[in-house]
Length: 107
Image (cartoon, rainbow, N blue to C red; front, side, top):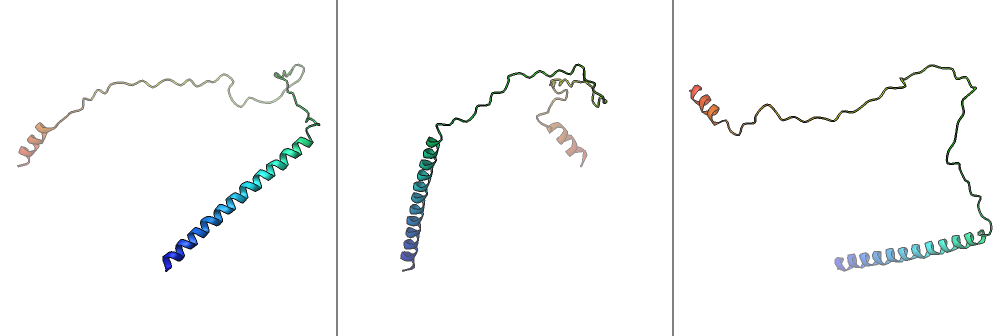
C-alpha cells in the first residue's frame, strides 16, 4: 500500500512541476511580446549615435611637467629560451653486480 502512495506522490510532483514549467514558458513569451510592442512604439525616435574619433593626439608642448622618474625608461627583460642538454650521468638498467658484491661482503 505504501508503494502505491509513494508512486502517486511522485507522479503528482512530476505533473505539478510540468505545469509550473509550462506556466513559466507562457509567462516569458508574453513578457517578451510586451517588450517588443513597447520597442515598436518607440521605433520612431532613434537613440543618438555616439561616434568616437579613431585617433586622439595629445600635445604637451608649452606645458611644464615636474616630478621625478620612479622607474627606468629603457629597461627591458628579454626572456631567454631554456636550453636542454643531455644528462652526463648515464642511467643504469640494473645493479646486479653491486648487489652481489654487497651480499658477499655483508657475510
